[in-house]
Amino acid sequence: MPPALSHAIDAIWRIESAQVIATLARMVRDVGLAEDLAQEALVAALTQWPDEGVPDKPGAWLTAVGKRRAVDMIRRNKLMADKQHLLAEDDISEEPELKDRDDVEDDLLRLIFVACHPLLSREARIALSLRLLGGLTTDEIARAFLVPEPTIAQRIVRAKRTLSDAGVAFEVPRGQARAERLPSVLEVIYLIFNEGYAATAGDDWMRPQLCQEAMRLGRILAHRMPDDAQVNGEVHGLVALMELQASRFPARTGRDGEPILLLEQNRARWDHVLIRHGLAALTKAEAMSQAGIYTLQAAIAACHARASTAEQTDWIRIAALYAALGQVMPSPVVELNRAVAVGKAFGPQSGLDIVDALMDDASLKHYHLLPAVRGDLLEELGRRDEARAEFERAAALTHNNRERELMLKRARAISTGGEF
Image (cartoon, rainbow, N blue to C red; front, side, top):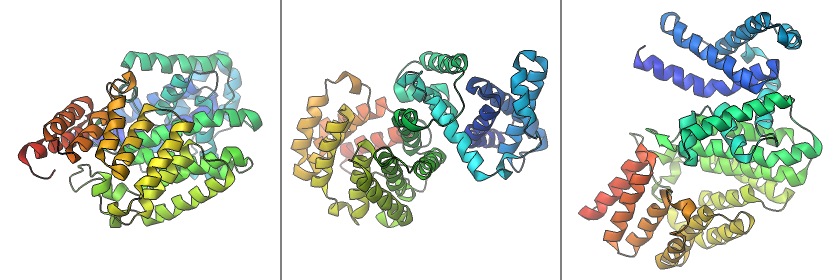
C-alpha cells in the first residue's frame, strides 16, 4: 500500500472511528462487539480502498460495512435474535451522515456515558474512552499513563467484558445517575483534548482533530444539560477552558511544525473568535456554580487570553488561581504549574523553591516538564550549566519527537550562548 494512502486511512480512522463505534453500539447494544465490528470494517477498507479508492464519505462506508458484518454474524448466531430485531429497523444502505444531527450527537454521548460507567474503575473508564472516542492505540494510551502496554490492553478488554456481562444500557443516564457519572465524562473529554493539544508521543506536537472532537462533545453536553446549574457550571467551565486553549493553535507551531512556547507566540495569530466564545462560556460557568477544577483552569487561560502581550500577563492572579486549584484538586502537576506562575510573579528563585520541593515526588519521576520548568528557572537565575542539564534530562524523558527537539535546542542554545 502506498505510504500516502496508508497515512490517509489512518487519519480517517482516527477521525471517524468514534462515530462508527457509537452508531454500531446503539444498534447492537454492546460496546465491545461494536468495536470489533468497526475493526472488521477497517480491515475491509485496508483491503478494498487501495484498488477502489477512498469513498467520498468514508465514515458512512465504514459504518455500512460494520452493519453488514453485524447482520451476517447475527444470522450465523441465533443466540442474538433479540438484537436482530433492532438491526432490522435500520436500513443497511442508510448513510449515517444523512441522519438527523441530533441522532449522531446522541450516539456519541451515549458511548461516552457508557464508557464512563461506575462499574468500571477510573483507570478503566479513561483507557476505554480514549480507545473508543479518542481513537488512540493501546501503546499511545500506555505512554500517556506511563504504564506497560499489556496493562492498558487488559484494562480495555476487562472493561468491555464488564459492560457486556452487566448488560449496561446504551443511553445517557438521567437525574442523580447522570450527575454522578458526569465528572468522569468531563475528565475523559479533557484528557482527549489534552492528547490533541500536546501529543504524548509521535512526530506531531499537536493532533487538532482530537481537540475538535473533545470540544464538540463538550459543547453537546453544555447544550443538552441545562437543567442542573451546579453540575452544568463545570460543563461550561470545561468548554471555556478548551476553547481558550484551542484559540492558540494557529500560533503554537512554526512553519515546519516545530513547537512555539506560550510566551514566544505571536498573539495576533490567536483565534479571537474562540477567545470570545471561551470568555462567554467562562462567564456563564462562574455565574452558575462555585468554581470547580475546569472553571478555575479556564480562568487561568483567560488571564493569558486577555493579555495582548506576554509582558502584560497578570501572573499574580494566575499564581493565586493555581493556589485555589490546588485546594480543590491537590496535585504535584498543579503545584508545578503554580511554581511557573510564582516564578514570573515574584522572581525565579521563588518558583525554584517550589520546584525543588517536588523533586522527590515519585509521581513526577518520569514527567518531562519537571526538569523543563526547572531548566527555565535556572536559566533565568544565570545557572546555565545546571539549566542545560535539566533541558537534556527533559529531552530524554519525553516521548514526543517535536518536544524532544525543542528541549535539545534549548540545551544547545545555552551551550553556544545563542537564542533557542
